[in-house]
Image (cartoon, rainbow, N blue to C red):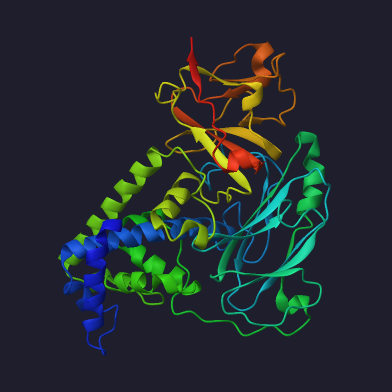
Length: 466
């Protein structure tokens, strides 16, 4: 898509030449553009919107779908006081180490105050603040703010009020829809009651309630938030979905030309998209763009080996929209690498796919174990779904905090990856695989040391054994 510079310039000049009285989302704009150009724009727009759409999947479940087990409503936490299981399929490559406390925020009318309690010094926690675009725009937690607790004002792009007393910091998002991904370390099953106590103290309070003032006026939008449907993102209807969601986002100055291109296919925030108003060849060109975008994304995700630079702020990702989409497809809500580094594999040392019918070992020498301030773990997922794997011992991850983990006399560590038990004496180090599926694993390193962050440390790949 980077090779479309010449086209982008042409499209922008064409847009500038349009009559002033002509609406920029008018179907005549698309009619005047070649089908190849429409395909290219649709492909770019689909990639751009992919993480927004799948972020909204979680927001919708958490804040709007009362029938979902994750439902809490806007500006309220929903906490899960247990590790994830194969039944948890809302998020791909779900984290099994640190049970979630999630909150979908709508700060269109006013900011909210997020309060976290003081907790033990040896318990890791993090509140990852993700805007609608899926940029990790701020962090609260052990690494950034410590374990002494605090109160933080979370505000949208247009709020310019005074900071109330008692607020430690104001954290601005460039979108009015925000998703908070809270993670709290669970030491072991006996720690559940302590975890619940901590989670119950995570609070979100609207600003007017915090300051004991009248509620502000409700902001009105042209389009309502849509019902989330997986099928919408495989058709030109994706344009209408984005037109609704992007009402809640400010337009970054770096994206003015981008948004002008998108307008040529009817992608204009707050404006309904009606495919019946466009010529059949235009719709076919948009559908072709969607198909090309899907193919490119699937190809990139299937060959993904390094997660390290896929997550971060807008400045860190440098508006690389393809990487942003890859991150959402491979593991949405991944942390910025200073918080946690993700690596893993879907192939063995011989570059062959990992198969559940085979047996493998991962051998870490004493000096090759990852260095982490907090802890590290390996989590097993099936492919292509990327969900946790059912198994007879109900173990979905293993790491340096796993109770009973055994090291070799010389300090080395061997992890067994197979669908059947490696023997009772080795089950402490067994991470079960699916029986008849391909699989992958993800290593998460929380509080990575510099060698891990800077990619000096390398993950050891599995060896196939008989």
